[in-house]
View 1 (tube, rainbow, N blue to C red):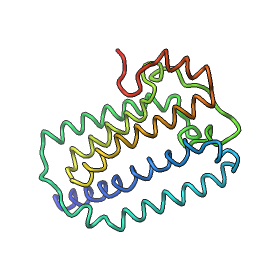
View 2: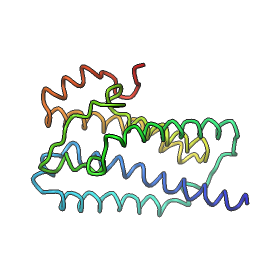
View 3: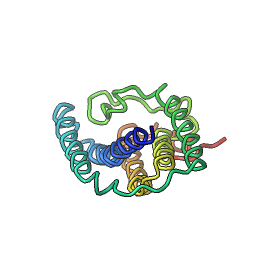
View 4: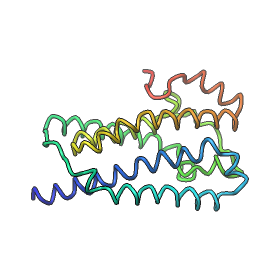
Length: 196
């Protein structure tokens, strides 16, 4: 049983260390260049960006044995804390998904002809970027449970990476929605820490 759990943990760690950098790269390719991609259209955008991100995933996975060669010992207190953080991340994700449909998650408003609307309802009325907070908490939860140094590095590096994505996203949203998004930023001043 322990061997099976170790294999599952290794698989999850490999997927996480490959997927999270690729996801951040995806948004760093979309948000700063939204006008450029909008002129190219969704098909070209998704094709180019997906190929680049999949190449990164492939490259990272080719290094998985080296990256995941070391694993720190399992710790019940860390694992319990990780499960709690992951549960909070899931709750946040559920709150986000009430307003974020797949087309928004994929970046369709950034690159398509329908700009969408400012999300200011529900969790978005308390926090501007709850989805990114969910990703941070979920990744931290997995790092605590799996305890691979490489996953810890990805977790720590992801925080400034996501903050950069947030800055580019907010710039793009201000360009797309103008005064409406400026008013939303004033009404919901917090990016990642909710107001209670």
